[in-house]
Length: 73
Length: 501
Image 1 (cartoon, each protein chain N blue to C red):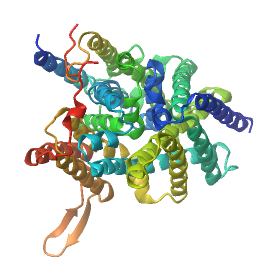
Image 2 (tube, one colour):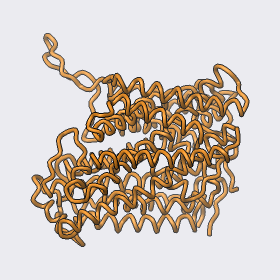
Image 3 (tube, each protein chain N blue to C red):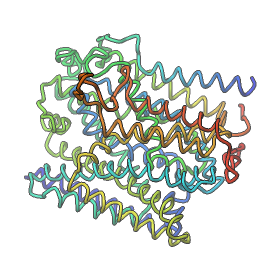
Image 4 (cartoon, helix red, strand yellow):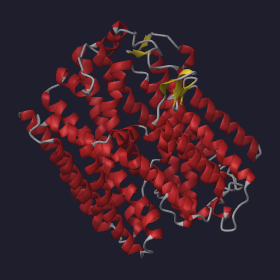
């Protein structure tokens, strides 16, 4: 993959991570899971996913778009 | 009374520990500005993570955040997660890592210095420092006011407001002047860890006192407005997004946070920090804000100006534990203020005093920085005695004010066609409109012939806050003005070129 494709891909992932942090599709839902509102549980799960994706980013694509030279792998 | 003695004792204990750390840090401090303000760019992962975290969010975690969750439901967990866990994490890379590379390569200590050098413009440097201090000063004043008020409430009025706020101000001057960034960061780390432990202990304690987490949460369904349901009341999608975006961008330009972009010891430190952000945010804010909402479900009665968390703890936990948490919150307030004093002082001495008044040596500048801390803190204290309404208003809207800097700075960092006029117009234009919105909200004026007309700047447009609209304006102005002007001969885009290593 060349650098600009990678950049677009990671940018799209970043936007998706942010947009889906709030479960818009659960608007008005009032269920309870594990003693917490269901959307809080979703959010906790999602932020754990965000942490994993951030970690993968630091391993695989760190420097992309910021440093002058891409460092893949 | 025994509780009061305990609380005061805990606060004094914290001060002594902070002072001891300050002394150790002072002994390690070289007499240079870079060491005083940035600990010579040597912070490791844990210290960097916690100092950034504790600096920014401490008082909010214990007081304002749970109060909002008490009044409107726990949706602020989502706002906070999106804001600090996700968007700030991304900006930590996009703006923060870039600033770290650029700062390290060119020896920058402040945002204004970084921009002024790139565009060959002292005026831009002064503008950025001036705008930053304009928003920071009232915010520091609010912290002192909070500390003074809390001490007055804690001692039942035995220590009047001015004495409490004054004592805290004096203590902070002594300790920040002594220790600089290294000591501040170390106490923040202790503070952050303490906060996490306290919040979880409170969460578990209250939950077990009422019969479990599920029982506590079930009470939310009976609250007027149903706190179990996502959204409703205060929380619209536009509110959630506006708040998270505006504050996340604002956070990056708050001097005490922006300066932390420069202080990582190595690239590895920044890499390790990034995935820890979302985890830390969830760990801290889920229990803190659930507690606030539970208080509503459990029928705790808090007045308009009362903090709900102490009331909840007083109801369900022993006095000594409640005292410990409240004292921790007070200490947290101090740990925010000390970082703000340090960065405010560095902006003033480095970006305003030094270029305009006296070209000081490194050693002299470190001394001036310490004087700056004292001056800044004293002025903010004096202002907090009078609490002028317009300053309170500015302090309350500071995040939005700082958010206006973020996009022009981002454009400058990444787009080599940016010109100094683009920066003047982008920063100046968005600031003017946003400040007008803060100081002149819409009022309806009756005019002859035309009838009643709205005059002023609205707080929201189409549900989105004025802060987000002004950010867009700033972006358009920066790019637009750069396109129609030429780079000045003194500008040097190459200083932001960053190769790998």
